[in-house]
Length: 130
Image (cartoon, rainbow, N blue to C red; front, side, top):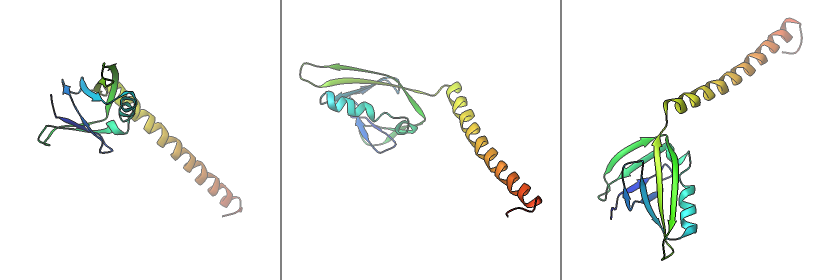
């Protein structure tokens, strides 16, 4: 059994039962409720910064902007749940899409500011409020 850990951005430490790189992380949860809580920790925000530590606490991997590709869970006879979390790096298309969305949001802010300035100049030119 591995004592490697996954450390998420919010400092949540998840002990791994086993792993095969970021694509297959095996975790044992004490029950269904813990499994659901654990699954909730794999949010976009928490996956924006992920650290892998070995059993000695040494960092063996740093990742940013990972994506939770899929999750599997199997309840065992003793009530524990064996979870498999499959992470991956974002595709170039996903990264580009996020950048375009960010640029569009910035454009809308700038457009609003330019409209405000244009209205203020127009008011001044017409002798209106300053």
